[in-house]
Length: 183
Image 1 (cartoon, rainbow, N blue to C red):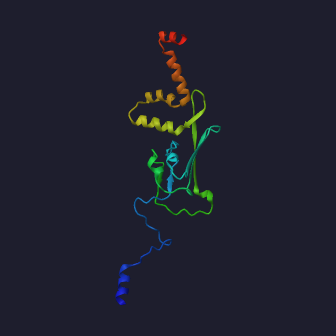
Image 2: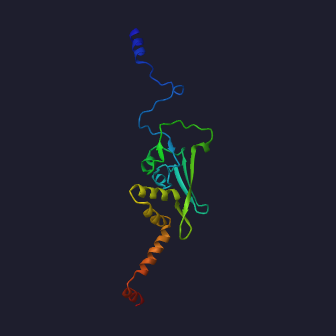
C-alpha cells in the first residue's frame, strides 16, 4: 500500500487546475479566428472556402458598401479561411474560450467602401482590392507613371471594359471586313 502512495506522489497531478490556472495548448492549435479588417481587401475568398458558412459577405450597391461578417457560433475552426486569405487578414489563434452573455458578441463585422466605375459610376469592387493590386504591381517593380496609367483600367467595371473592348474592335476592323457585314 505504501508502494502505491509512493507511485502516486511521484506521478504528480493528472489533471490541470483549469479554470484557475490557464490551459496551455499545443503549437498549431486551431482556436478562435482573429480578424484584422485593416489587412482585409474584401476579396471574399474566405467566404467561398468556409464549409460551415460562418463567413458571409453582402454587397449593398445602393449604399456602395460591402459587409463582411463572421459568426463564431457556426465556426468549426477548420482553418480554411486562414489558408485562402491572400493578406493574412484572418488567422486562427490559440484562444478557445468563447463563452458570451449575448449572442451578438459572437459576431465580428467589417464594412468596406466600394469603388465606383469611372464610366457608368456603379459600385463594383472594394477600393481596398484595387489599392492592393496596385501595391503588388509597385512592389514588382512597376514605376509610378505606369501605375497611374493602369489605374483607370482597374477602376472600370468588367461590363464597361467589355463594352470598350467591343467598341475598339469594331473601330479596328479592316475596310474589307465592313463590306462582308453588309452582305
